[in-house]
Amino acid sequence: MSSVPQQGAARRPIASFRSYAEAQAAVDFLADRRFPVERLAIIGDELRIVEQVTGRLNYGGAALQGARSGATTGALVGAIFGLFQLFTPSGSLLAVVLWGLVIGALVGALFGVLAHAATGGRRDFSSVSGMEAGRYDVVVDDDLADDAARMLAQRST
Image (cartoon, rainbow, N blue to C red):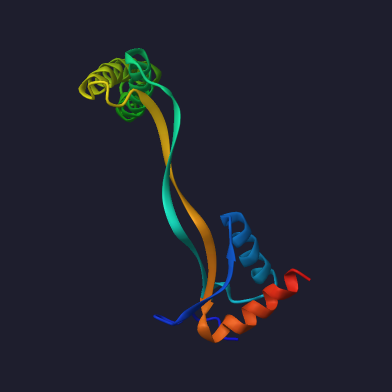
């Protein structure tokens, strides 16, 4: 078996799974048996976007989300500028980071409220988006597909 990936080689599906974890386990099974795994891929098919609603969003929630985001950004910017303070006799890295956090939280809260107001009540909820596949196909370069399929068939026996 050659282990060099072939550019533009035809690929054939050898197995389909309902979850990514199952497809990953199949690839791991092949890897444990020294199959040249660089010659295969996991392809998600029947993709869909799933938006999980996490709760209501009002001005207070928008301000809190904005403050959280702004505080993180402010602390990071403060840390970067605070590094320059290490070279001055009166400099304090912690003070600059804390001021960055506070100012970032205030600016973030303001932007959160303004952004929420700009929606005009059309999006009064918070959510998290992600992509899911309906199935996951393990595909292999055509010249190795029969070998891989035989090896996977041994897994279920």
